Length: 339
Image 1 (tube, rainbow, N blue to C red):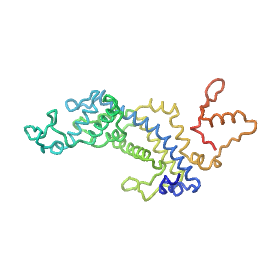
Image 2 (tube, one colour; image 1 turned 45 degrees about the vertical axis):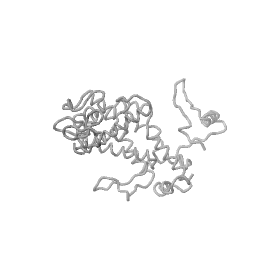
Image 3 (cartoon, rainbow, N blue to C red; image 1 turned 180 degrees about the horizontal axis):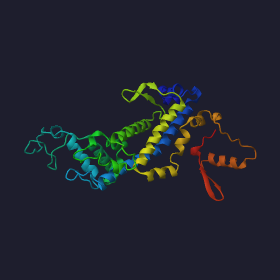
Image 4 (spheres, one colour; image 1 turned 90 degrees about the horizontal axis):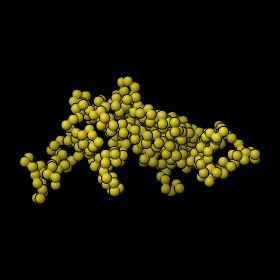
């Protein structure tokens, strides 16, 4: 297995987490499962955030948006095009370099097949929406607002929290007009800048996850820049898990700022249970050295009930444990490691 995983990727487990060489592969598996356990909360945040922004624009549009872009169901296409026109200067957005067969308007700008000025440079937002639309088409589906919104990644939505979407005077853009609509439960005085900073941290964590990096690995922040100082890594399981847990709480906090009902539903269905059980010292020990776990339950010869449960779990079956007909726990192989 080590042949297909770089030495650099594995060495951090012995150098940073201080596990034994013989435990590195097991610790590597712990990281993969820990990353997987983080996904449900990220998914909850991403879906809640994008839907909140979409609903806010349609239900409570910025006061001065009328006449600039659509705030109806097609807003994602209209708004991204408006931002392109706003952000890209005319001489860069259009071209006067016409080929022999191309038409030009009275000002000499090249026209496309619809007799509109040919766009040669678009804003990042426009390109993302166009790419999402093309992805939907390739799947053989009709391009709709909902499908395009679903195809846009988390970075697209966190980008909406940046400075360029702030408009204090004309009130044609998102902030601060939509703060109370998108984040109705945020503490009084919460600023766009504060939300942006939190979401950027979460996005960086998500990017590390999607690139299969060690999700627990952190660096101390440079006090001058506030950004990670890559020459000062955080060492130890306890410290690493503590920082990851802080990021996790940030995810849940932002979900609650947007919609408390979504957060309550996530927690009541134990969407956080797997992550919390793994993101701790005992979580790592359950993979590399289970004998270090403080809580141990020994099965005796008479423990036929427990033995039967273990046999069923080893076959991949889900088990329901009841008392007086009521469900107490459901247990499956996913939450257990067999030795």
